[in-house]
Amino acid sequence: VEEIAAVPGVDALCFGPFDMTVDFGLATVDFYAASPDRWIHPRLEEAGMRVLEACCAHGKVPVAAAWDRATAEEWVRRGYRMMLYGLDMALFGRALLALKVDVDEIKRAAN
Image 1 (cartoon, rainbow, N blue to C red):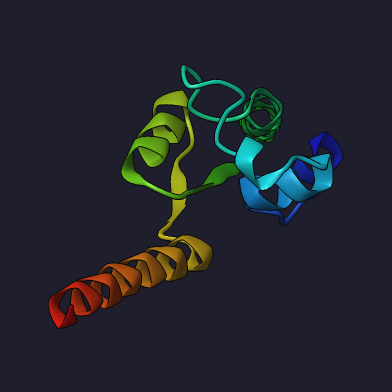
Image 2: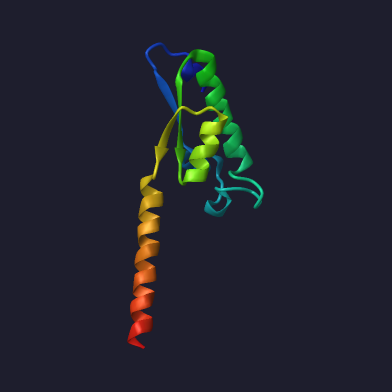
């Protein structure tokens, strides 16, 4: 990441925690945190901070991906200046959950 941040003409670096989850071989259930008191898995947090530090060292804009408001606020608090928010995977997942609630309500009403 440090070498990429040093490339002239690169204006920003985006930290993608979903991609890093796969790269690190983490299970989907481990993505958010290793324990309830953590906001994100420690390996992802460390990688995100490394991207941020490389951006700061080379005058690049740090960009992170957030899946909810709390995560976006945490990345901004740490120094990220641009956010990808409402990722397709999260938006699609929420839409499916809402659809399931509707279907369950229809089933209950029919019985």
